[in-house]
Length: 167
Image (cartoon, rainbow, N blue to C red; front, top):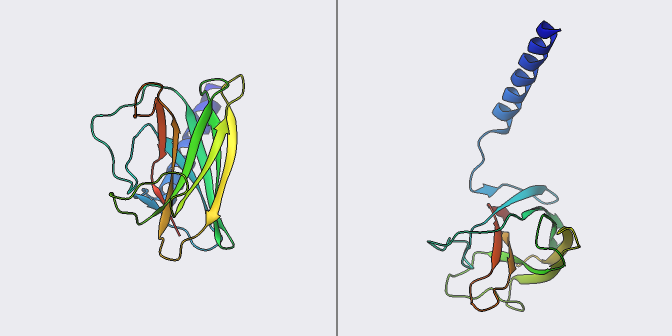
């Protein structure tokens, strides 16, 4: 029995190694084409509207968001799922198109920014879909998910996509 387990483990390691070799090391963006889609992981990184990081800000919560982004016709669509968030709470989700100047804001209603509200259930889970037309000058998009701070301009909780979804 022990020999079978070792042989099986060796086979799993060999197969997973070849899958990693085929997948390659990811870059800073997801290369996609028309009709392509990508799974988007998130981190607790506070970013500016041009996707650059704020220095000296760290997260303090344990939410686990992820997204599935795709192009549907002339729209960019992001399906966001969230687990282990603060129960019965509203989070603001923004889909932001790039390129974007760091001087421009990415508030709701700004050109190239689409916003939806994700409401968590009693267990802290939730889902929302954000959709908006692709700007002809845009080359990609990223996602920001925040929970406002009560007595501060800095969000109490924040998550942003790890990379830019390229069109």
